[in-house]
Image (cartoon, rainbow, N blue to C red; front, side, top):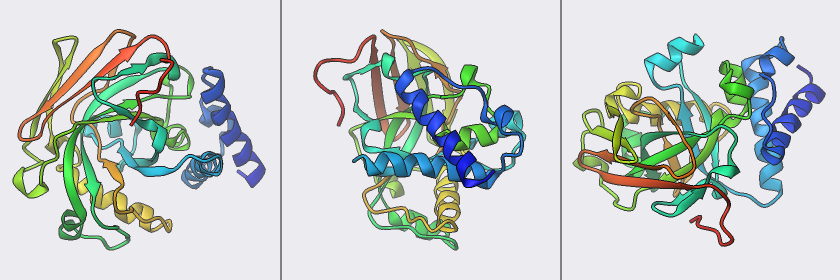
Length: 270
């Protein structure tokens, strides 16, 4: 893909945010698309959004489970950016109509106290860079019609990012074994998923290390104060207006997200 074609693809994805109308898979429209094209298209959108005043507040890692990697025929994760207006307060209503095809999944969020810059970041360096961890819910969304995504589609679409709800109880990373931290996921009081941190590349810490080294090779630093979502501990679940979701993690507490049908007059974002 040349620069003009990449720009066109980025504009099509940005237009989907505004129109609330998903587009055809990019991989069917641009059959010669590559991994580098996909990340370039993602970055073009981020540059457009930040130039309009939005700020980067962290990153997310996707495709961290063996099942999702097998489904898309890949052997490693992908990543996207978290922007300031992605963050909503727990228990406060989140308007479903802001999204196109929302789904939700439970994760353990890292909050960094110092920068991480790869390549070459090790596990112990990643642990030392973490200020605390929080229970979190990630709302994933796709600008690709009917979620018919391949690897390059989801990368170009900012790793299917949507929104984030963080819990309010911080935990020192040294006080919990994230590999063994089990989670129970409820929708409207009914269990819809269970899992543990080991589902995320063996440990969420491995996901943080992967991210730091992968973005570092592209000249990106994970900044102090930023949030990193390392990947879901169980399968994502569709979201509808009126739904309430709670993820409870052993040793970390719980986090709840509620969804309303329309955008409220006053913002409930953080």
